[in-house]
Length: 156
View 1 (spheres, rainbow, N blue to C red):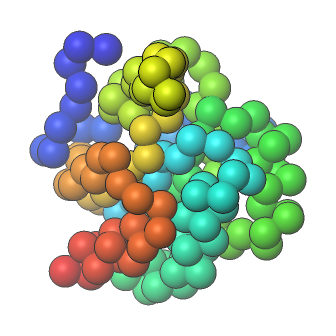
View 2: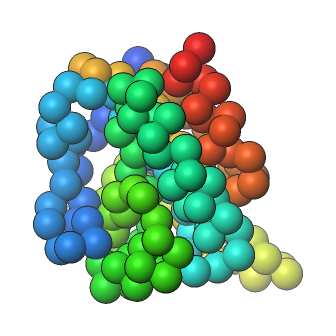
């Protein structure tokens, strides 16, 4: 997509599917602030650490009036196993369709590894305000410590 939304723009109203195969839309969060964190793949070392950190801070985000939503291209069944295996305390969503939310926000992008180019999820997060507008974007972040950085920003 050539016109990627930025801070101040409305979050695209693109449906996702949660781990229980239920559709999720921005309006489902009832005017609350929302952090959507995008990560490459369930049950890999970096993604597991990031999800565990967000899960450990879930009550702190809730106390700050912020909902959490983790997003990857993994299917709902894989999310269910991942949540159960690590006792995660947050909601995960699948963005498996092409032209999904990660595509629209520029988190599904060309990556390179060992000289090979491929499409993949770029780790990052978006803070959405109560009106559904993008308040902040973090791109190409490190898994460890990112949840605490986002929490500090939503409190600040």
